[in-house]
Image (cartoon, rainbow, N blue to C red):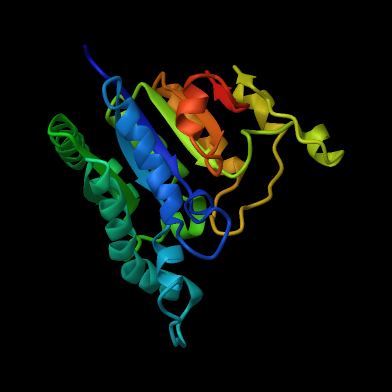
Length: 253
């Protein structure tokens, strides 16, 4: 039986559980769910968190621009982030691989084919690709969007069946419910134009995104006929609970 392909995007807030440290428990939670779903689904992960991982170990002295410091932190943190994934996933019988991409890779046909072919070979051999933007040479994620766009472009490129964006809210809330401090999830979305009117421009504490970048990602996915789910990744068992419809989240058709 052909397994369904899920592109799972994990933001920094999910990985840190809204603290200042990468949560091994959260990475183990994600791995445990993937191991349970392994017969039905194949997973490709786009993960932020390199800068958050570095901040646990170092405080850089600098005179340079803030963006350069963040690039340096990403360079220090990326191997730590991968090590935590590798250690936790290996204990569950899962194998991981690292793919560092930049947006310019999606502009060249040859690069796109190389990415697709590499990911297909990895998945066919039961390795889970863990993708991050190559922040040392590119600043797009740091500046613009917490990997949401990267996840959507990758999902479209590898013909994913589903894009799950893990964040720190139960999907997208109605604007009115946020204003009255009683958040209510918009569960089904057909028109992204109508959704635009509901979102606020607030950004998350660790991530650089916010709901605007998630809607832009969902637009890319929608154009590739891929459904997007925006799910609260801080909750335990969030992937399985979403698949079994046990929690509130936003589905963008």
